[in-house]
Image (cartoon, rainbow, N blue to C red):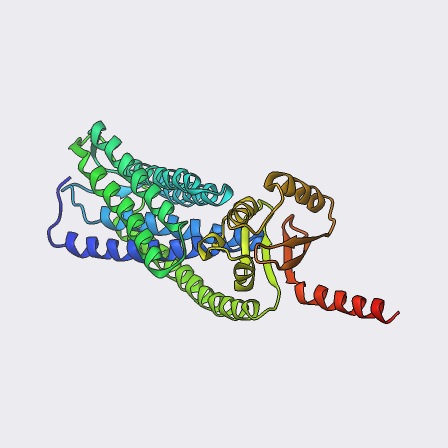
Length: 370
């Protein structure tokens, strides 16, 4: 296909702008989906998938409009719509895979699925192109385009699950943009149109002008969802900061786990109480990870697997458990684990050393007096 030098630079810049904006919004929404649970998590996940799908679709067709084959071009209505739905559905599946299973490998697999969604959207969109000619493909370049999309997609989500810091978010968004751009330009290098006057364009196909209007609507939708996500994220971050301040000013240590036994909340008092490394307290580690580290520093005397099995059984039955633990520096910690409705639990850790010492002194004084 030949390119129009007057239109391509503008369309390419617009495509990159939509793509970059979309990817930054998508990674931000993905982080919100990871932090939330239940219906809220599903809502964030769906929004991330739709945003990614719409943005990818708009980027593809903006760039496609930059190419001028020198013959009339139109777009099949059904296949154009199918390409949009495929982009949203498959990328949502990729995000879901990354969230469903803990660990970096799940994110890699999810990123591969996202890359596959980009490929499905692109080639379905190209199938929608109607011209008085025949479209042929260079199969090695087709395979390379799909591989590049999967590679950068995997790298993007693997980076995104590391943390939700600004630097990591920007890097993950850049990798996701590279997944789209590398796939698109490699795939467009694989296509060639051979004119064939015997082929006619369907009368019900979309004209480039109509498609441009559809792209505009999709871009506006992406902008709206991204802005809504950014606004909500700002409000949530403010509330998170307030909650963190409140938790860190508690006299008790506190940890909260989800139904997958992954840490979702803890305060600084818990880390200080057991002399743990701040790195081990990052969200996403498991109860066993924390107890093993606690045992390494000498502040847990029980068998980790046995203790976790006992706790799991109590949580499954909806029972509250209470234990007394001794630390390496001679402190006595009273722990209370209470189950939550979603299958997770919250545990409070209270240093009762001084209270026990005072009680013993009173008992000793009473015994001497009597």
